[in-house]
Image (cartoon, rainbow, N blue to C red; front, side):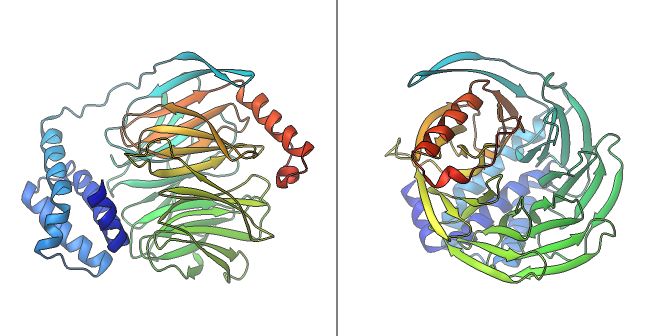
Length: 429
């Protein structure tokens, strides 16, 4: 771990582009007949050089050799695997968790069916379904209650890195390694529109405006594109980051766009003009960003810490950091606010979710859900279910019926002490 941290210290962006490139090598191998050597070394060298401007030399190859060997083993396993589609199955688990004077019972549903890691997910506006995007080149719509896959969209254009729902839930959007975003019918799976020709790198994240008129995409090419969702045409391009833009979000109340990048910054932009309003430098790569549902605060997830900022006051309100394992560092990959903003969920490299009290800034619950890293997290609209997507190829729904009451208690305590959370919007029923 120390060696990896040293690499990150001296060469952070390129190293993680290399890491992502290697995962894409595996994805390409499963859909081609290229030899293992061609797949790993030729694609690896050319892609890293193109994306970073760095041409690998002997010492660099030595540093990443363990990852190359890992890819080789994974590819060999894939060659022998039977990739016939399996019916998704579910598992359930009920436990009692004592939390101060509260007793939280949860039920865990596990969704199987993807053939490679899940990169992104989003819950539908109704909360009855959710959408996943995977390195297996597919996107899937799942029924939250039954655990069954009700729609599968297959592409031949590479891994699906990000997904989204239209505000009415009738359309879904995917962003892919092939630099293109696509609009689909959420019922039939028919392709409705493509947004392409503007990015020069793979699309890393996307967001849909509340009025469903504008699509936001970010890319490894360091830019963010705003698209007209009715015509598929580019509205404007936002430039200001110096490395891959990993995450984007529209403000729920409009007027502002939030982006996060591997250059270690989070940026606020004016939606109408595209002008950069504010750039906040963070400690480490920014993996995920999100607005609180009332739009007054933002969440910035970096590898080691998660920050909460007041948008209007431009004030850092809290820093969340996990000190539970002094030997092995836990990396934070994704984060989200509960619908009332009182609870923050963070997905980690250890396959765990962490629940944080946004009043006390303390972690009150950690649950091990996946065998590999959690790449995406989301709350259901009613705040009772946390949905996760993992590199272990599975998604999960963690149903915690008592979480909403606990969230309400946190909010109430905060109001009594006249803390900054007094601006919370009402609970979503």
